[in-house]
Length: 367
Image (cartoon, rainbow, N blue to C red; front, top):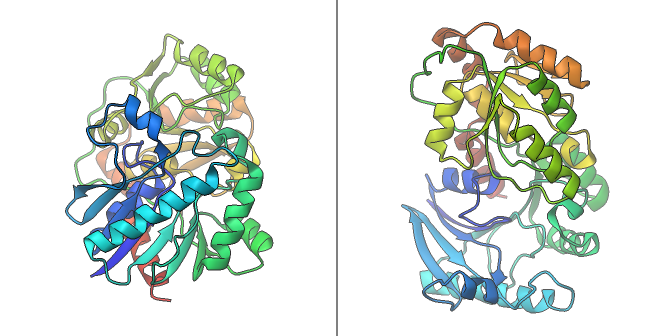
């Protein structure tokens, strides 16, 4: 059993994505120190956390310890980034010492922070999105992202990315080999749910500028019931307006942010999953988690024509135009799948489990 430091790009409390799912899978066979991105000390004070001193260590799983880190106000502002980074590195080193971690390996999945000095072991730089293309969406400086990428690539023993397309981009930018470690999914062990008596399409995940709202409006126009789950994270006024208009449609029901168990229930009572991403450089480099989650639940999927979209013999219908997308949804939703049909659909993506991804990462850390 090894020890892994996971420098996450998101907080442990955020909606579970690549970082949390992978770290949780790694913790089945390893001890994991999860490190939150730093938050402003003012934000900590406003949230009335009992202790504002960093580092704060918390046991969040049988083999997972979470480290909360804080920084000066404006942690991502020019001039304060260096202060934040020094404080962050000190917190990681202090946690390693306090927990008596021996030669831990380190995974850095942060777009804005670098590997800490003085921590041994293999260093895996794991790029989960085309952060440069998403700089505006995430509110980061493209220049700062480029600086961090250069430093982390130079320090890393191995570099990995979530998609073939992103690996190609990074190979060109970094001038070194990049291994592909795609996103994974939670394999369902429970029975598939009952037919609610009407066709229902499901959309889960972040609700923001990444979505193609023309496609969503076309689906809503068909009259099919659309169940939506996930946080509203849109920032631009146009995206906020389009999102709210879509969610206000009479046949669209927004369930808010659901637990994993509640998402499973929602998918089990739906018969088609939606991956309606806009055709942007950021989306083309991504590996949609939602598509795998739908397939693991035995749903047929309709997705916009972006890589990667196909998974073996699983039913994934691709559409470039909004009308074609909506037509595919109504066709696939016409019949309710049997448990056997759902099981065959889910069978196609067994090799995409998070446990399988963790095994791939463990092999990379042996280098």
